[in-house]
Length: 139
Image (cartoon, rainbow, N blue to C red; front, side, top):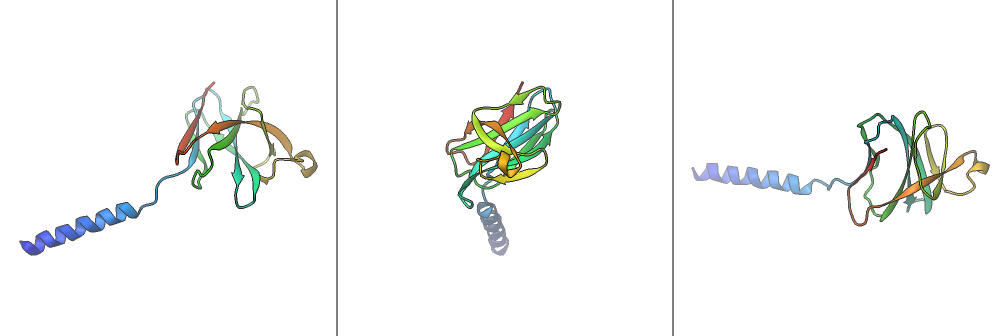
């Protein structure tokens, strides 16, 4: 009986250590809670490139959610732009980033046109110190 208790204790300890060693879930997601099918772009400060960076496009059906940024959320603010696939509705703001009609990752937010891109105005999302964040888009 003592041996059985010892093995159960070791199994519980091993399971706890495995769970405790699992990295925390951290990402930025966008959920389409609108009545439109939409395209989404995302903007952030890249510490690696020391520049503002924009990425897109993710296509979200009505009701879909998509992770658009997987690294740890180490900034307090991120930026989102979205538009309906029929271009009748947009979610925008006052923060310009470069974009392209095709899928893109663009380092730098200035001189968009001279680099073959165009500028769109993203809206700011304050995540504070949250490690995981979801931005809902509603119409």
